Length: 111
Length: 112
Image (cartoon, rainbow over all chains, first blue to last red; front, side, top):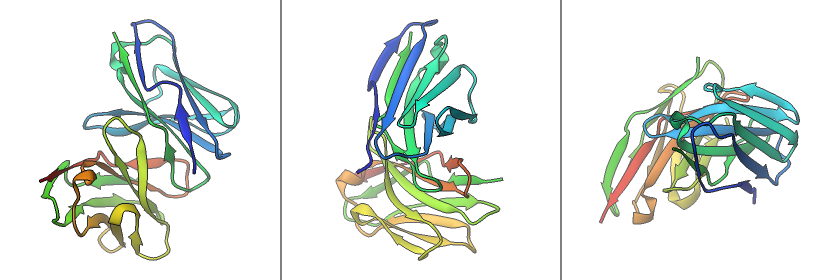
């Protein structure tokens, strides 16, 4: 079975802190994605990566950056956390044109 | 432009009665379509997918969906709801690019 793991289930940070969310997949997938999920808005794509060191902006990249140094790992970075970044963050991976497999999510609260 | 519209934000059914969750899509290309389920505080789990083979797709836990190109729909059904089906359901599409488009979700409530 495909497994996508995220470094934390729950995270509480303060405004202005630098936040790292890590995601690891074990199926050698080329594509990896970061979404945020907010009530009534569904899933919104922040960034995705289709290969090591390659990244593309999604629909809401402002305030975020990403890093993919190894194929299995995709990190989301909040350079200076703000309260409006309080959300559920979901990581996913896929092979090309196939379904995405999701991690369990990280619920981030920024105080 | 591609889009996914889930027509109901909330659906309530009684246990043992049929479930219908509606999804319409728009795509200029032949899409792949998916249904995912999300239980509270969990990630999304794939229920089923359509990728241009049979138009009636069977998934896990007794769910199925029918791809209707003429109606641009991909509705999710289940003959008999179970309490454990209470969750949020997402319809999604991709058309051969890296981008997946998700609907805003339908929260299913199952009444005892």
